[in-house]
Length: 192
Image (cartoon, rainbow, N blue to C red; front, side, top):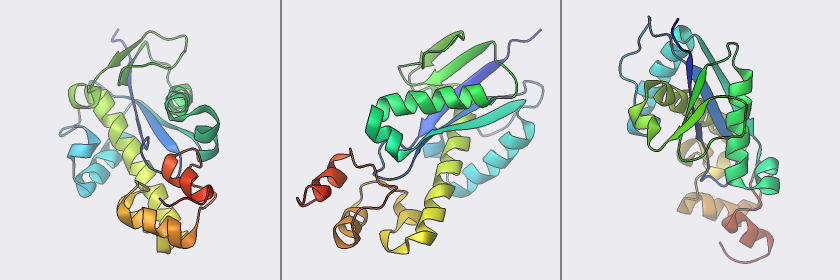
């Protein structure tokens, strides 16, 4: 019997706003998906098309997340590991082995390995990076509809000049990560 391998990746470590989102994907070896790559190397249109194909063809996939408040409480690294753990736990099929993008694995009772640049090397991790990125980007577009003055649809919450200027002009939202320096400085009445 084929070993079931889950690929895991997260997105959203660097933004000043929103959750860190992880995905876990168990691909079907009998139903390969062409064009899988690191989500950052794909166009938005290609990512969205691949995400639909992954959701359709994968044996199992799931999302996990850690909210801004959790990030502020436990730090971004621990929140990323927590989001990964939640994604793995949410899979409908238990994997035999888990491959994680990066250099750390969450503490779980699974056979696991961390693979640096795994999103460029391992198809299941690439698939996870695509699912996570498409999901988080959609959340930023939804947040943009509620708060268009911040420009979240364009910069996805990253600390761009426009985002920092919007923070100065309009203030900090509940979704902002208050432990991140640019947000913290504003809260402490310093300039971003």
